[in-house]
Length: 314
Image 1 (cartoon, rainbow, N blue to C red):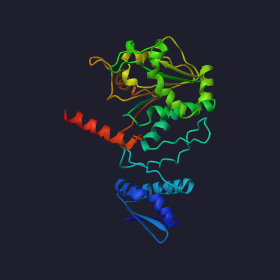
Image 2 (image 1 turned 60 degrees about the vertical axis):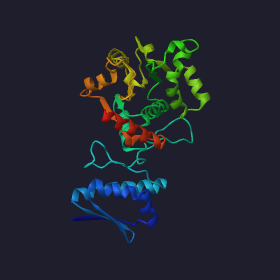
Image 3 (image 1 turned 30 degrees about the vertical axis):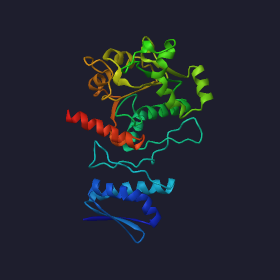
C-alpha cells in the first residue's frame, strides 16, 4: 500500500476539489481504485503506487483549477481509456480565444477537450457524435481563434442541402432563400462569438463564407479553416470532392451524427465511408463524442438515451 499527501488544503478548497455532492471524489475512487480522505488540512491518497501517482496528479490539477477559477467542472471519465492515463480536468487548458470580448469558451467535457486538442494538432479532423455534443460550436470557435491569431485568412462553413423529409421546391423565395435554413445553424454558432455588425463586415469581405456543399466543386481553398457540418448527409463522391478542396496552410473539420442520416436507404454516407477509408492516414484524426459529452438542456441526453434504447430493442 502506497500513500501520498497533498497538504495546505482548506475545507472550502477541498469541497471545491471534490465537486458537487463529492462527484469528483467518487469518480476518482472508482477510476483509479484508490482510497481518498481529507483530514487535518490535507488530502491523503492510498492504493497501488501507480494508481496513487495518477490520482494525485489529477487532484493537483483539480486544485489548480479550483484556486484559479473558484470552481471545478467534473473531469468525467474517458470512454475510450477509463482505466489508466490521467484525463486533465476541464478548464486547465487555456480558453479558446474568440473575437467577442467578455465571452470565454472552454471545452466542458473530457471528450470535447480531446476534440479541441485534435483540431489544434491535426490538419483534418472527423468528429462523430450525437446532437448537443458541441461538434459544430467548438469547431467554429477554433476557426474564429485561428482567424483572430492570423493563422488563416478565411473561414468557410459548409453544409449539404439534403432534404430531411421536406421538399426544397415548396419553400418560398429564390435559391438562397431555399438553402438559407440549412446554413442557419452555422451562422448561429458564429454569432455566439462575433457580434452582428462585425460578422456582416467579415461576410461582406468574404473572410467568412457560408455555402452549400455543391458550391465547393472546382475550388481550392488556401489559408482557410473549412468546416463541413451534417456530414452524415454527404454521398461518398461528395465527401471525396470536399476533402480534395483543401489547399496549402488549410485545416478541415468534418462533423456529423451517423445515427441521423437523411440519405436514401440504399446510399452509403460519405462520413461513414471516409472514416473507414482514411483512419490510418497520418495527419487525420477521428474523434468520437458520446452521450456524456452532450451539453445542451439536460433532457437532450435523456432523449438520446431513449432513442438508443428503442433502436437497440429493434
